[in-house]
Amino acid sequence: MDKRPPIKTWAEAAPRLVAVAAGRAPADMVITGGTWVNVHSREILPAQDIAIAEGRFAYCGPDASHCIGDETEVLDADGLYLVPGLCDGHMHIESGMLTPAQFARAVIPHGTTTMFTDPHEIANVLGLRGVRLMHDEALLQPINIFTQMPSCAPSAPGLETTGHEITPEDVAEAMSWPGIVGLGEMMNFPGVVAGDGKMLAEIAATQAAGKTVGGHYASPDLGPAFHAYAAGGPADDHEGTREEDAIARVRQGMRAMLRLGSAWYDVESQITAITEKGLDPRNFILCTDDSHSGTLVEDGHMNRVVRHAIDCGCDPLVALQMATLNTATHFGLERELGSIAPGRRADVILTSDLRALPVHGVIARGRTVAVDGRITVETPHLDWPEDVRSTVHLGRTLAAADFEVPAPADAARVTARVIGVVENQAPTRALTADLPVRGTVDCDPENDIAQIALVERHRGTGGVVNAFVSGFGYGPGMAMASTVAHDSHHMIVVGTDREMMAAAANRLGEVGGGITVWKDGAELALVPLPIAGLMSDAPAEDVAAAASRMGEAMAACGCTLNNAYMQHSLLALVVIPELRISDKGLVDVTRFQLTDLFEAGPESGS
Image 1 (cartoon, rainbow, N blue to C red):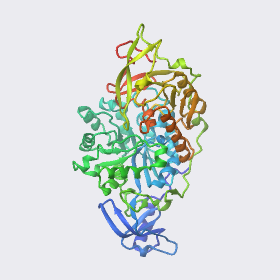
Image 2 (image 1 turned 90 degrees about the vertical axis):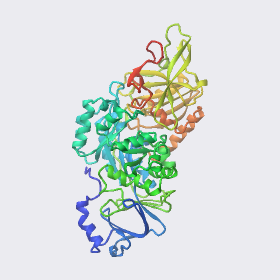
Image 3 (image 1 turned 30 degrees about the vertical axis):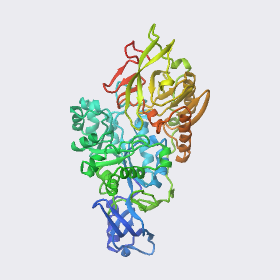
Image 4 (image 1 turned 180 degrees about the vertical axis):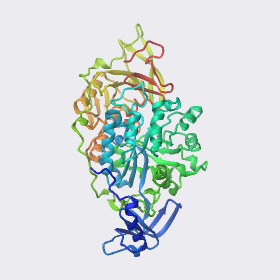
């Protein structure tokens, strides 16, 4: 199979581009009379024509009549802005619960024509093989999907066990693949700070290949540890949540990536570095990080992020630069994409309003791919192997007793460490709660304390780790289970009833992965995710509908959080503070150490 993107290189296309611009050859397409949004000069230029040949821009200027031949497709853009196709600077396709083909199908009508993706979710389940499958399907798409080779599987060695590990040798091999544009987010920031040889070897292999190293510094500490991380080589970071985070990154020569995902609202708190402090916006990039299928279908993708940035006070042209040219420049692709200019890939959005950004038409690589919210092209897919659809291995049928939390001897009540969910943010809080003992330690739904369990699902060990979580608002008699459990992707079960927790876990073992919600002995919702327990190859609309029913089921169980599923899926992410759960136990991420479930008692909970 030819793995090259289905577009000629600039060198291959250059003779014709020059001939078209000079009027010696006809263009394939000419867009006439549009208002050109020039992100290089930050200008709005009315009554402009754009000529396209070989999937690239050939002429951009006031009159392209000399480029029109008998076979040239002519589009009248009078009254419309011509905006470069939008770029997502950092995201995980798996978070959409979709394959690359289905994800592309979902976002193309919203004007996304380029994505820089990090498939570290599937890397944790299937290793380098899973990355290659994602990479190969990405290259089949009619838009630009570049892959960053995952850097950290496991994300925190010694604190979790993944299905597969990623090695420096894997990284070096992947750097030769045609669609690899860099190294995915370096989540093991304590390792970089400590000078860990494996992490530095991965960064060195990436830099030796002349590619970009993605960052992930999930700590509020901007002292020596942050400076050591910056010295370790990451070129960007999307984990900032405060204005001072964005400023610190840019001052250290990194690009600050401001994210708006389904549940991460980190643009408003950081964009003031531009709008109020006046920092150079060229070093800021917009991204989504994690967007689930419901957000994609109902609210949009990068067009949603740009609108939000504008609503937060950002100049529309600056916001568009942060979602186009800045992103392309960061990955060394400024001459290839990210703007409407000669030689670049012909990726264009036609819109009538730069603030609301309604997407009336999308052109990618010189052909129309969507009109008024309707996709007009195919998004080719792989035949995913059968074993990739059989990755949930529980080893046995689980019972309510597996979710019991033994109490310290002779204790009537205990003080337990509790994971505290923070709405619309990835970090959690390390809380404590006094919990009742009735033979075992029970959760306390009346005070918003539910039980959480991590069920091992890669090797069939039958292992279950139990702890407690607060913030979902769940009432009695419920459970929710998911095989999407960043980043090691075991199974997370949250509930207030142990029988329901066992039923939910066994259900996902039966269907091969996904998300299920149970209450009072019945299943309220199921989102099947058969591919690696992370994705579905069903259409985005079908997955979004199932995800919507899941959200309704969570609400019926008492949850009122915005996009609570995203918080649920990150409860095992042991590289973001403060408190998480893994297959090895409860993790204090502020110290990167395992910690006891009970504050002043013997080790328990597993």
